[in-house]
Length: 373
Image (cartoon, rainbow, N blue to C red; front, side):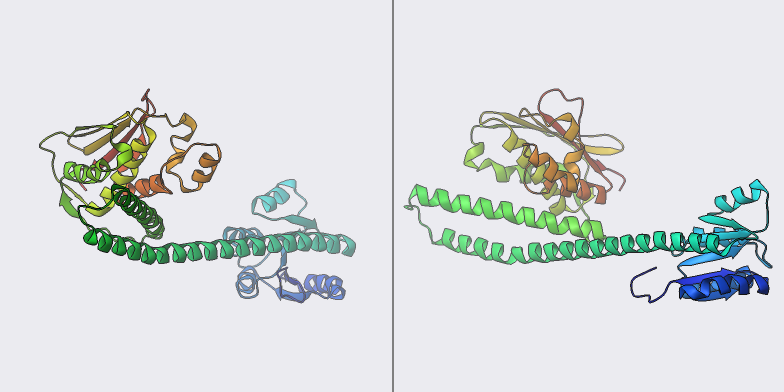
């Protein structure tokens, strides 16, 4: 029984008019809405049109047996939770077993007492009512989740505008600064600039994660030298004062083939991984970035000698809904959902990114591009 229905609908299916009249007589005082059908095909039409709350179904029917009717109703996602009581004159245990195998929720053997019939109907209607209430609660939760997702997406998208304004004003300030500017002022301006760029990357990650999941992200595929993308991305970290004493080893294989990718998206993938690696090592730590290729793949490896991500998190770090759990246990995994974005972005390029679990010291990220994409 679903919300908004004044009375439960009961569909009675039997080709014998006397049986229909008898069941109707028993149920009429209960103030149910009674529907009747004399064969299986008519019953299925009524189920589709009226969506009854319970079905009393005779087994021996013309055109289509009660077993077949029951199976069709239970295989249909829209009607499978409607309780079905099979009414049968058959006494064999195998027939009762077949009724249950067809999906029947209960059965009554003819002849039956009116008290038995009413008890079965009331019991199953109560179960149906609880199911419908639970379904409605689930739908309400899904609507609320969708609303929160849409609201969060709207807020994140709108955050880009003030960030652009801040960056624009910083650029104007930079053009107005002269060589005699106080080192302290320049340091603070640089910090603000780096922070706004980092914030913009996080916002962009969140927006693009939503687009990838919705299938609306449009990739601008062009041929790129992956080595060039690596070098261009790592260059942005070299001017950070906090990385001044850290050692960055580049071991990029010459003669790398070009690969058809969205350069800006892949640079953001590298930015997320490089940022974690450099932030994870000690002030005098080392990050090694290497490239290689074979007939199938172009591979980038990023190795840091910092704190090793615990084994139980090495797969979870790429999952969106695991980030809070990992953070609550005291392990910081870079900016926002950078790992999640990187995984989805690589999959959108028919590639992959993962942690090498066999690596003993620090963390080794392996990023693979398919050459034949």
